[in-house]
Length: 322
Image (cartoon, rainbow, N blue to C red; front, side):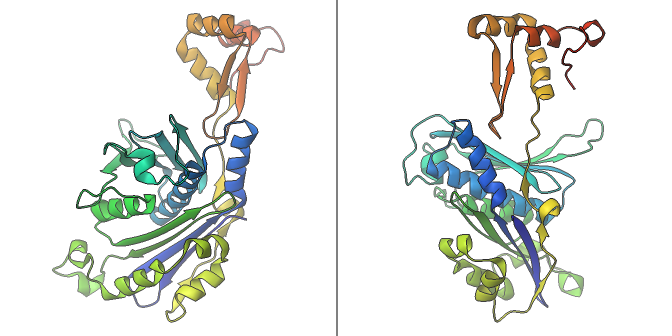
């Protein structure tokens, strides 16, 4: 079962989280395969790493709304999106527009001509009137304009720029597991914070640097195969960890898609009757697939007629849009 573990290092300004998406991640891939829309292996790995990273970031900030992680650019992958709700339910997708090399990394997937970007959007669940989602955007380059090859490097760079907090993020995904380890320096509190800012501690906190170095020894194979207890014990056996109850099941990360026939129907209504009728005449029906879960929604001429007929005028037994 998918799980997320939180922990802190006793007496040190360092916290950590570990996520393992297992059944939920396989469900995502199985749905795409069932709709004959499977992604190339490097894209599947990117999506899995983004799902793991989004889960860690959402759990880290405890935001009451959706955290949306997007990478987009000018390569064969036009867009990849991971959306994680405040209850840790997630969905993920990508739009592939060209051939993907078997060993492609971030630069070859999204940043071929240097125009790739990463955006993190926080969309509040209950917006105030006029309130807009918060969004931060960074390029897919490091401080020296070098192209970054891993989504973990992109997100570390983002966290350093946006939060002024050192962050180590290790991600890995295959067709069975999507996993991630996050280590982050906490802001200095109490008297130690007088006359200094978080920025003053960037790169110089000895406790964080030591633990970050230990985390960096974690291999992809270990991250994908070891259970949480074994992994944390192997990495930090000399440190004193305070671990919190794991988040699993209904409290943990899990796949969930918010698409529905009703939402698709409202989208068709937004297109207008003439355009939808043209689609039905040309194709026999309007067929809409969900980019996130692969679900297919079909609307024939009768369905379309009901869409554009006010509910009180519909014949008994007609399907209304909820």
